[in-house]
Amino acid sequence: MAKNSLISNTKIKRLQRRNFIKQTTIAVAALAVAPGLSAQAADGLIVGQGNKRYKVNTDWGKLDFARYPVKDCHEMVQDKQGRIILLTNETQNNVIIYDKSGKLITTWGHEYPGAHGLTLFDENGTEVLFICDNNLHKVFKTTLDGKVLLTLSYPKETGRYEKEENYVPTETAIAANGDIYVADGYGEDFIIQYDYKGNYIRHFGGRGDKDENLLNAHGVCIDNRNPGKPCLIVTSRQQNAFKRYTLDGQYINTIPLPGAWVCRPVIKGDYLYAAVLQSNSKLWQQSGFVTILDKNYKVVSNLAGSEPVYDKAVPEEMYQTIKLFQYPHDVCIDDEGNMYVAQWNSGHVYPYKLQPVV
Image 1 (cartoon, helix red, strand yellow):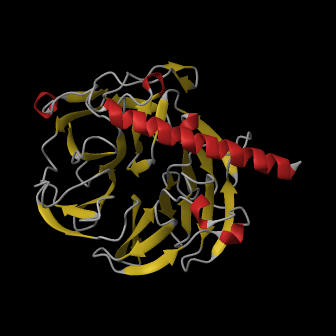
Image 2 (cartoon, rainbow, N blue to C red):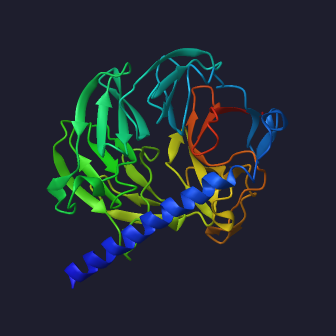
């Protein structure tokens, strides 16, 4: 029975991956027929609701495209020097580092054709990066200037992968003790846990019909907002939800976000921020927005999206209301509360900066 179930899930996964590729092709074609706001029209726009409203700056990250090109702008982080670090799958410069004003500081990286996930971790006072590469099916731990310190290959120790190509990591989260959690968001949807040296510990999640299973486990982060009780928050994007787990992989609960194809959760202060790739009501029509949740996991603002309205404990379906973003893929919140938005498949656009309105 288990074997038949596994075969069935594998077939489903292949069909869904083929469908994703087909839909992505449609999305690329749609760029020519469904333009959003022009940069000029969007610049200075105020978006969001309540006390989480922001003024848009579309010019912030623009560079000379001939010298510093981007393909998909996948993820961004800020280091303790205040620099904003962008990861793109453009091998002329996989990593682009800005100051907070948008001025280019430096670039590096030519070896990550599938650069997707970017996580920063302070390791005993020294900051390091974790880069997930979809094409190489690996995770790389590097210094801030690109020296590789550790490489995690496909997790054959799990016994759930027939070949390397089935493992397509999208994101990492690092615990205080250095344990590494890898989200296989475009592969088999497992979360794989390693110790700080890269030794396999366990895996959990994966596809299935139970609450603890995942569908497009695109992102993962560690939520330390409840003192003494850290937990993992994992994206289950095609289920329009986040799911919470203990640090040893036990399922806690689901945070439903109807209508929202959420990307990775990003926690800053009391709030959780996430790019929403697209709205369920307008799939592959450049219908993304940004959502913000409070420490009780309640949506309090949607930037370029519908005002959050709750029916008991579940929000009503959310959707894009202003065509500011195309396919937002990640957000970064800096030490002053500014937000930076990176976009996938959005016409080689550089990141936007959104400044809080007080």
